[in-house]
Image (tube, rainbow, N blue to C red):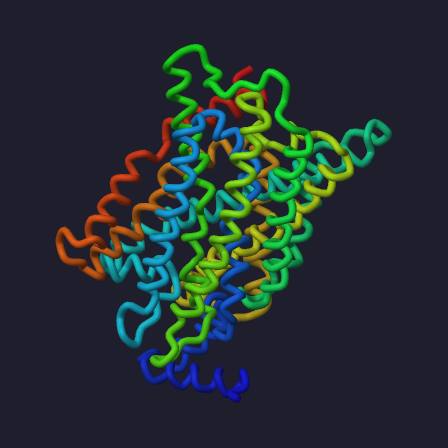
Length: 448
């Protein structure tokens, strides 16, 4: 039986053998968050991917269904699940597509596909848009969920507290957790987040079943005009597309798994991804379909608002959302920390140290908190910018990279499937995102 320390030694010897980096570069890599620990198990990738994939946005899927309708809604849910699973498989396969080299970061794979400079220009801005935007949205959503929990528990016996303070409370947790050095160090948090995501999703659909089909439920489109219906339809496509954003961290997660020529990392990684996608299906499909079935087009954009009672159960679900979002924030922040620290140490020649990490990570958390406080309707802006980043990094870029790096035979199944995925990008919803901005801004009296 080979113990973990022996396995780590073997992995290090293999990496040293195939790696032509200097000792100084290896020391820096051993300090950076993504490459500092490579002893993760396959189940680490399972709950990291669940935490990254299943966001609080799952609670808005019934609303997306109300804007799509039964036929298109079910079709879009299934096709999105299949396509994103396929593109995730591509990224797992491409992690070690070049013998003796690991693409530990999304942009490194982009550089292999598009060239050293162009790869950075294409991938890094889009990846940062996704990860930083999600962190800001998680600040707002975490604050809103805490506020909802407070209001439900206190009923009318407590003084109203502004959303700003709840966002600050939520951020205070990250001022502590953000100093955990790497993905493996947040595995416990990620596991708790994954369990919470399954828990509040189960509460959402089971409570909806308990309430039953509402009187006079309707499943038709709400807008009276054709233009309004089409607008809402594209917005819902965007909501579903944004539900699958885990591709932006998948290579960074795989980088933590040990790899040797005999046992490459793609084996345990794919095992974890398969489990994660089963959990994703168990979260997404029941919530979307049952929520729409019970409430029709009268469902709220957050199904917990439609449920409202029993109070204790909905309060608990909101608390579960908070715990899950704490984990999600950390999973998406880790690659950003890695980019910042890489820039400071490799380009600006700062010395790797605890103080450097302490300052940069605190500044990042403070900035995401500040933006969340200033723009509580940021989720609407996310829908707009996400049309240029979420769907490309999930549906489009993996297919383009596959065609560029693997070069499948023309008219083969792989070639044909990848071109279908590229065409799917054309259905991305900048229109829906623009509509979301207008709606969110009006809700916050931005135009008044």
